[in-house]
Amino acid sequence: MRIAVIGDIFVDIKGYSEDTFIPKGRNPGHIENVHGGVGRNVAENLANIGIDTRFAALADDTGTGDEVVEKLKKSGVDVSCIKRVPKGMGIWMAIFDETGDVAASISVRPNLKPLTQLVREKEQELFQETDGIILEIDIEEETVKEVFELAEKYNKKVYSVVSVMSIALKRRKYFPKIECFVCNIQEAEMMFETELANLSLEEIERFISEKAAEEKFVNLIVTLGEKGAIFSDINGNSGFVPAEKVKLTDSTGAGDSFVSGAAAALIAGKTLKEACAAGTKLAADVITRTENVCRIMDKKELGI
Image 1 (cartoon, rainbow, N blue to C red):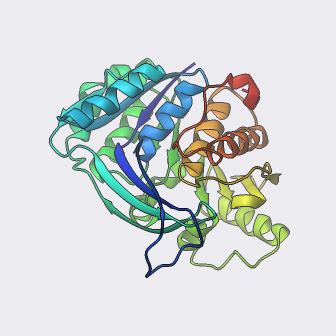
Image 2: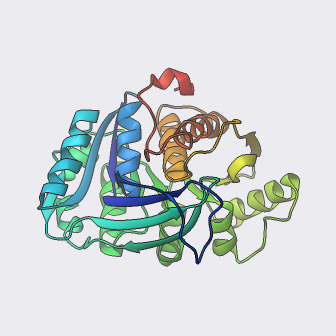
């Protein structure tokens, strides 16, 4: 099984508070620089669980860009579809409180315009020679359009991952073409303009089931953090998978890892419930680490 990932690369600057975080005070702690970006995280996750992964993205034409590409290569990611351009990578700076949750962040988005031409140039490698595509749905709309046209040409399914929901919603016309759309509960609230957090699990599941059918989502998964995830398909078949209990170290990359596991499971022919279970297990591993990706493991641990 080979999966193509199309998305972005970021460098993350993370500050961790060692005591109770004081928003306007001086907080003792430590700072780490790690490789990030939603697309990059997904690609490395897949490689770390032993899946043949090809990543299409832009990287800076700098020493930092060299480091990012080299680390992906060492992880087993096929980097032949990464193009080096000025300002091809973004920057995300975040402060984490004492519990491991993000207290504040600032991001600088990369220049993704050259990505459309890259996708066209690598058409055969990304579509003809792969079993499925995971797309960062909030990248440039021209690129998104190109991806869906080529996926239709080669009869390949597209699975999405979200970075910025406000931008993703501008691509809403493509949502019914996505084989599986994954978002967290806050993003679902934005998408459906409805408060969900105070509802019971049964009420949320019923709402998501109705929306999946109403808005023609083939498969829709909404993650609920420490509670787990709710899933539904276009026919209203729904369910719930509880989260695994682990100690939170850093919540960064939890959503990316969930999509990695869930999409890989679906591409391998697993059910939507089994896909949710795989995503949940991978997310549980990632949040115990300061890295944005999972440890090296056998995909059999995820039931894939």
